[in-house]
Amino acid sequence: MPVTYFHRLCGALVLALLTGCEPQPPMPLDQQLYIWQRQWRSAHEQALAESRRNFSTLRVLGLQAHPKAGWSRALVNLAQLKADGRPVIAVVRLDGQLPALDVQLAQQQIAQLIARWQQAGVTPSGLEIDHDSGSARLAGYSQFLQALRKQLPADIKLSITALPAWLDSPNLPELLDAVDSSVLQVHAVSDPRQGLFDPVKAKSWAQRWSRASDKPFYLALPAYGVALLPDTGGAPLVESEAPLNHAGERRELLADPQQLADLALQLREQPPSHLAGLIWFRLPLPSDRRAWSLTTLKAVAAGDALASQWQVQFVKREGLYDISLVNAGNLDQPLPKRVQLAARGCDGADGINGYRAQQTQQHLEFTRQASVRVAAGGRRTLGWARCLDISQGAWNVYP
Image (tube, rainbow, N blue to C red):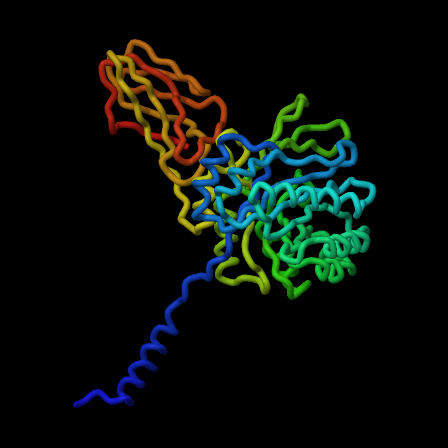
């Protein structure tokens, strides 16, 4: 029987119905990245190269104003930024404690920043103002943004970092009307003693923000940690990228990669209206001890399954073994509490880097004395031993 147009049409309809019943993969969300170091280092070059495939746009701290220090520029390596080639949004940080926003001075400083970047071959596609304004001052902040918008080149989009506390302000519509987009920050916005980040609150804030305006918005998500130090005033001091010259026990807080991965999946599957993407804070460098590794950050942003995998490796030289732990997964992990190896004929052993060694007739055991994170792909020596033999595959790691 010849195949007719009717048969082909029926086949196409059946195929459409069948495929329509299959679950569709989550829609991708644009992934962007903050660069927040105030002084660029040689390590930025490799970090930029390794992040290029995963993050579409760089939001780069370029300028900041503080009540006592005044205006200062971040020392950005513009040659590296130009070579990277991705779209760039310049971020201007205005401290929330500034007594007033000087429109004329801000315009002058921002114009000089943009001109300097353009002369180096970096043309920002946008400008983001990061200002922790109190809700009571949003009307004045809106006027500041309106005046700033008039002075910006037409091809530079204006955005702001926004706070969930503004959701209840009657001045929020006017504020959002003054900009092209907003970045809702959902980390480090509550009392630090309650934690750095709450995924349930973050999702709720995003849903509410989506109803505040029909303009696009982004979510700024954490990929870092902080430490809390006791202070005589009652509220704790917060130590982040730079160490504080302050005595006292530090309570470490770290954004949980799995929590963020779960939230990102939920947002992809059911994105709030007008959500344009996610922006991760911040690009990590190897020296950044309170940030996720770039391997973990890329895995979370890409929606990859997170997994930890420890491997024990050792190198033998004339009966002396150097013993190391390797984090072979894509998830940063605290060092395991205990590592046990099958060994014989040992006449000496010692732990280093926070481990203590113990010997029995059949085993070497290394016990952790202090908790330290090891980045995905990282290595840490846990000790040495002088033995006749250590079995290559006979070891156990205990969390």
